[in-house]
Image (cartoon, rainbow, N blue to C red; front, side, top):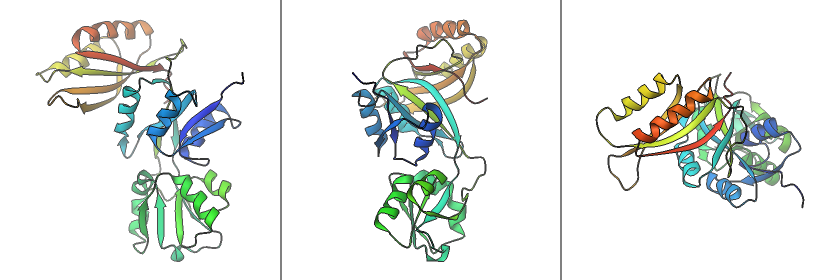
Length: 275
């Protein structure tokens, strides 16, 4: 039986997901290219790819909330995280001038992150698309003139497009956090971060009490995201990320949260990659 070393990513070769996967697993990986996060999750849960790489939050646009819900709903486990700096390039067929670009198609997040640039070029019509690199591939394959793509330097090189405006993102330090997901939990002991989901009743002080426990147990809360519980008005689930110096602090916290919350689920334990 051959080793299945497929990595499921959202997007295609040359996408930011591809860059993260290559950085983490080496350039020789085989990619399972998925045009949606739903397809990515399906690839991992069905075993087509044992590992998936998915974006979870951006330093400008915030959390990609549906992805938290997907990880939770399909019982995936976060086993690692990775951060990359997003550097958006405007690219088109070689020889194209910026003034000849009539339309630019890209992922909505990329369009959002470059809106200041396009405010100065009002003649360009912006079109939302599924994936940054896929637009670049399409322009090259069909020799589409007058259409620009916003994608990575890797995509420009891969598909033979020319960068006609480099680094068009509005904020220089634009980082995106990606997570590595599997159907099985992380078996490494080298952990100092966890992603948890818990549900609280809508009564005064319930969240404050949980936050106090985290603090008392020496856990550092790096992220909190609330989401309404579907079908139950005024009940909320909270997705939190915590870092800890000692696993014992974390274990104790879990025991306390089991008592204090209506339900508690560990979405993953892994190594903090921010430093």
